[in-house]
Length: 159
Image (cartoon, rainbow, N blue to C red):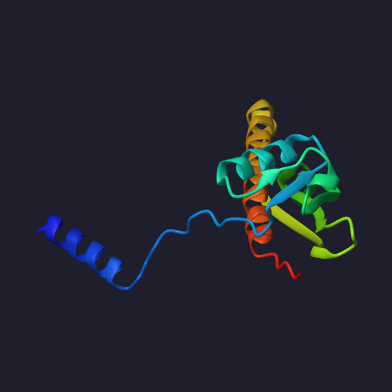
């Protein structure tokens, strides 16, 4: 009976046109990413995996230039215990960028993406909480790369 229900659900989902979101090709034939930092390396790796856009070695060879405006990680106290000790932090990851060509045309105007995660804190588990913070920032970085790729895929190129 359960197998029949699972098959019916699968048939209903395919009948309604449900499809997992796949990778979207970028509208640029070539892209130059100047910065060589951790997020940039992950972005380049994902663009290479798409296969539709070449990564140029110089800005002159590229149809579009990806420029980082700023990147910041912040840790803000969210709540304190009755004794004044920190109970929760909020981790913020900000990334600002733009995509343009050497003629001054903007394909993606200056854009800032902000990701936020909350993390509890305990004085008894300082090392574990530090490791959790590192993992959360890594997850935020992966999420940031995917968001940037989606925004790049939605860029409009005129003429």
